[in-house]
Image (tube, rainbow, N blue to C red):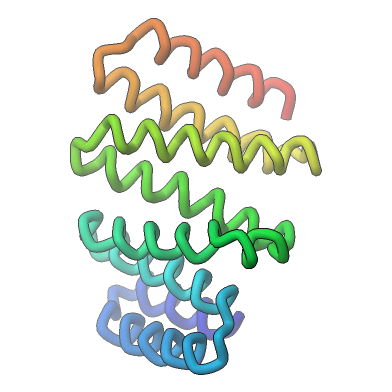
Length: 168
């Protein structure tokens, strides 16, 4: 949507205050009209703004709230493919933020959820971009496993990622 493009532009231009103000407006609208898709998308982009500002700690609760909105059974049943992709990206991004903060066990759990979600994309549409996105989650999982000292499992995750890249 247009507001997403604008918040992304402002974040890229390091205009974080403007981007946050616009996301506040969108949140109020989403809540007023009970638009869970708009709320989930706003939370995703607000977390991305926090990451662009280098604040991974602030991004985590926004991703977590977005994931909770998406995971609610009523919303999940109505979700379309694009919303499923947003959910998968959020799972992956919260895992990345957790890993950046040294919270490797939590990151690993979120990477596993992202892999599960993204695997459904590949089953539905085995495009190169879907396979590469799934592979990137396996790579993130491998880094978390490495950080935990679980090297054999890390190498297995890298092998899975490599097989996806060669298929794509």
